[in-house]
Amino acid sequence: MHVIARKGWEIPESLATPESVFLNRRALLTGAGAIGAGAMLAPGAAFAQKADPSAHLYPVPRNENFKLDRALTPEDVNARYNNFYEFGTTKNIAAAAQRLQIRPWTIKIDGLVEKEREIGIDDLLKVVQLEERLYRMRCVEAWSMTVPWSGFAMKQLVDLAKPASGAKFIRIETFMDPKIAPGQRQVWYPWPYVDGCTIEEARNDLAFMVTGAYGKPLGNQFGAPLRVHMPWKYGFKAVKSIRRITFTNERPVSFWEKAQASEYGFWANVNPAIAHPRWSQATEEVLGEGRRVPTLIWNGYGEFVADMYKGMEGEKLFI
Ligand SMILES: Nc1nc2c(c(=O)[nH]1)N[C@H]1C(S)=C(S)[C@@H](COP(=O)(O)O)O[C@H]1N2
Ligand SMILES: [Mo]
Image (cartoon, rainbow, N blue to C red; front, top):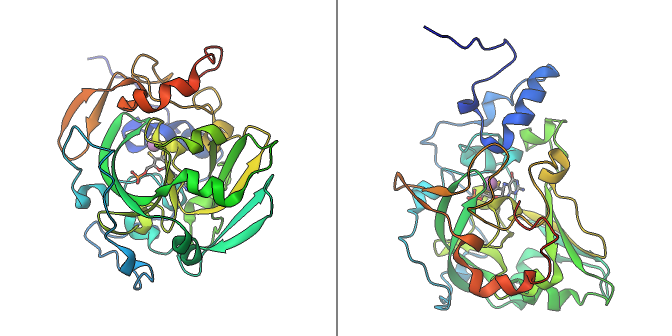
């Protein structure tokens, strides 16, 4: 029998998510261990949160312009299968994420804007128009879900910020608190988690600032109290638990691009024909259904977004 010997420092790929496998290897090579098991509670643990002061705002009216061609992912499936590296590299981070205190919570809006400001999440919720949208979510790891997000059009955020004429990009940054987020003690990652988009993308009808899901305020594991979602892009663009939004004339370098530029670029638009260097993007596992379906270019949202990229064929638009 032919046995492939595994070197001592290698971990089976099945133990790590594709996005993290390279870095986990590096971590093991540098002698740093995995994060403390104490951060992971039993799968059945309740995700108790103090009463969310925005709870009375939900459910919000559904915007029927954004329809799905598949069933919604059941909430209990979605709420227990998450990427949030601050709380661990497995999907089972929901319990650990409850340590994040989501009030008080402020968001700094700075850079090339008429006036830099810091706004509390509950004050922000008062000046935006909340709605529900049913969206697909396609992770670069080739799984997908469908989620009833609540939130507001990202355009509203741009209008609120009043960017200066030189601003072209938006850099979106999460919190930084290694005391409560064990992942942030893994010093080989370029914390804090950052990603971004162009202002044109942010003004696109589809770009959405997410404040709730399943008719309630966002659970911590989804990135409470504010995350972004651009459903035509891979899920890693969807920064969770946002603390800072910077308008800039420089293209932001994302967490994943910093970690591994050969695999993750700025645009990261979904395209089944362009494989990730380590796996195919042709199909995706529909979470909770145990089946694979073909992946669609722009994740099926081409009619909304393809025009934005006309004339940009020289750019690496897909991952
Ligand atoms: N702050 C932060 N935001 C993040 C991540 C992360 O690790 N940290 N992971 C991203 C990735 S890779 C994906 S696929 C989505 C997952 O969102 P979900 O757990 O709600 O499905 O969140 C994105 N936003
Ligand atoms: Mo992802």
